Structure formats: C-alpha cells, structure tokens
Amino acid sequence: MSKSCADLIGHAYAVSYKLPVAITRCGNFYGGGDLNWNRIVPGTIRSVVRGERPVIRSDGKFVRDYFYVEDGANAYVVLAEALAERPGLAGEAYNFSNEIQVTVLDLVRSILRAMRSDLEPEVRNEASNEIIHQYLSASKARSELSWAPLFDLDEGMARTIRWYTDFFSHE
Image 1: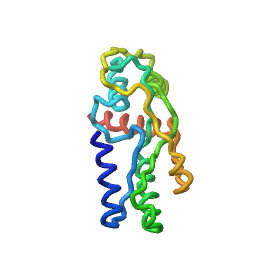
Image 2: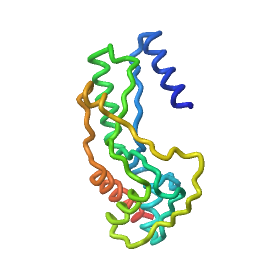
Image 3: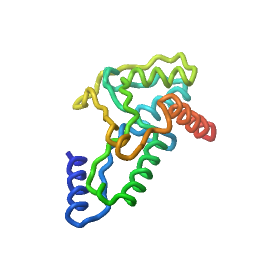
Image 4: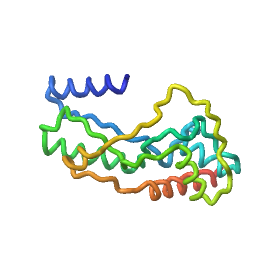
C-alpha cells in the first residue's frame, strides 16, 4: 500500500507542481553489497560459503522477478536523462525488469550450481502473507525509453557471487 501511495504522491507532484518526477517500479534487486542475510540471494550465498544448507522460508514455488542492481542504476540514469530531454514524461510510471519469472527454488539451485555446491536447500514452507506470483512487464520502458537490461540473470548472479566470495574472503 505504501508503494502505491508513493506512486500517487510522485504523480501528483509532477502534475500539480510541474516537477520532473517519474515513478519507477523494479523487480527484486540483487547484487553485491546487500548485507541483509534474510534476503534470498545474499543469504543463500553466505550459507554456501559457510558450507551450510541455504534456507527457503516458503515452499520454494513463489515466482519472482530478479533484477541486478547495476541494471537498476542504469535504468534510473536512462529515465533521468529521458525526463531531462522530454519534460512530458513527468508523472509517468515505468517498470524495469528482466521480465524473467523464476521460482525461489530455481534461483537457489542456480546459485548452488554457479558456486559448484552439492548442498540441498532446506525448504521450510513457513512463509505467510506472500504474493505467490509477482513479476513486471518492462515493455513501456523498452518502447518509450529504448531501455534494456545490460545483464541477464546468469551474468548478474556471477558478478554477485564474485562480490560476496571476495567479501567473505576478508572476514
């Protein structure tokens, strides 16, 4: 609800005060530097580095749209530059996403393969009040901003794993 309210406030400021504001909605960010171990990507990588089974709080079948942090930074720059060149974009909303729907279990298994681990995830099936199938279409950003992600999931995850591997080697 708070995200929807922020979208409405952003739109209202763009229209009412003629401010160069646009609304962005992105897939689930992942990438190096996220030290919230409760999130699936950093938590899984940390578990593998420690030789521990990664934990999946849901049943593993929830679908998400994972978005590499460098793609997010690039999306914001592309949108800011477009907004500067075309003030009529103020108040518009854009989704940024790889548009790839991945289950949590498939994501964890992908990380395990990339890290050459034979660990099996511990699926707890404890999650509640979660959206089962959540993803975004970035077609408007592609068509109106000529935007496209720079990294696919495999490359973004490889970069992410390298970042955390280096991070943990200094502990």
